[in-house]
Length: 219
Image (cartoon, rainbow, N blue to C red; front, side, top):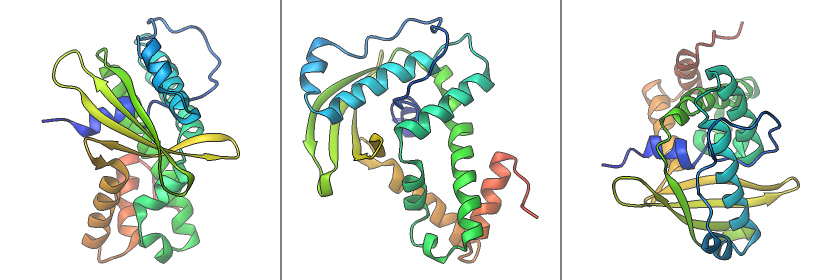
């Protein structure tokens, strides 16, 4: 059975494009890109994903860096390569409209912190996975979908679709679909279940996120 959470850590939220400036990583960059990859990534969106994969694995899978440094790098790359506010709003679903402005602001902060805490450390589990671009196609409303395969040392390849859109700063990923399962939709369903158990109150989710991230409730 595919561990989609771990795969997302390796090919989703962590593979963010960024201009990180620091010492050369102690590990060599994995051979994520081949000449055929470059040819298939003929669009700007495809090139964005290829570059994203090259940079992130090199910077985050380095076993010589400290957990704090890995988290700091991850946070920077996450915000540069992914539309984090849009993903967070989508994950909250219809409850975004019901939340107060104070609840929204706290939620956005907790969402980012939980993402960093959950996925940054999982790059220590990198085991030589390679990303192969299959095709790039137009999505709805000007979006693009970059279809790829995650090639693993053992086990079958995993299909991963990257949904990206361009803003004033460049391309941003707003969803990753692993074997037909949207990670954004999965997160929304999980958050919705927590809120429903809390009687439909957004603060019930905030309490859960505070507990997971070690944050105290605001005064």
